[in-house]
Length: 259
View 1 (cartoon, rainbow, N blue to C red):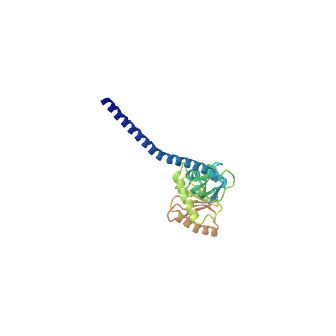
View 2: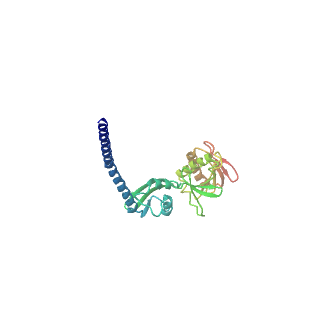
View 3: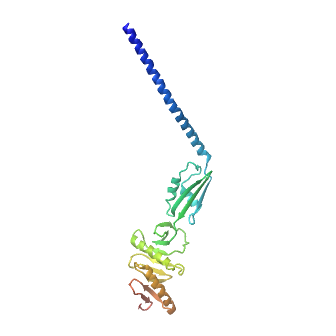
């Protein structure tokens, strides 16, 4: 009789374990089914997005020097892009690889237009480095090498920024002072010879001016005052030396005049 009772007790316990497992399975099903449904809906929605908004047009604003074709190549976008899924950040980083690009803003305009606003670097001067010409911005950054013979009117800096970095930096500051003094509109050709700081020289339509380094604004003011006198007296000048404080040396063709 004892063995029969023990068997019956174990049978009851087994039925209890089975009921608990069934309850847990039902609980898991309650959680898993909605999650699976959401995943299926998300997958279906993503598939719809990939085909619903094909990129049809890219509009560029703010470009003056770079063409739309140049900018399209910089975006890194292919022929079959989707507006909803393409990465604005990837476009931003891809376009910023160009030295011409100062800033980029990307905006998606549904259903199929990508609008890209850019701010370009401004050509500041022309670098003559060993006979090769490069457009540089106001920080001395090389923007583009000129391949053709047409050279835009910009002040020319003759030097090598990779070998004489400090001298080139001073030349950029000097060109900025030349522009502020209004010499750009008064001269046909302005050339800054930047090989050594203390020997930095400006060629203004054939008139050689030794500028040296520093105090560019004051030196150019003295030059403008002196230039009028030279013209009125019709003095053939070999060079003008502005490197000395409170003194200007004018070297006519056959003599030296100190002021």
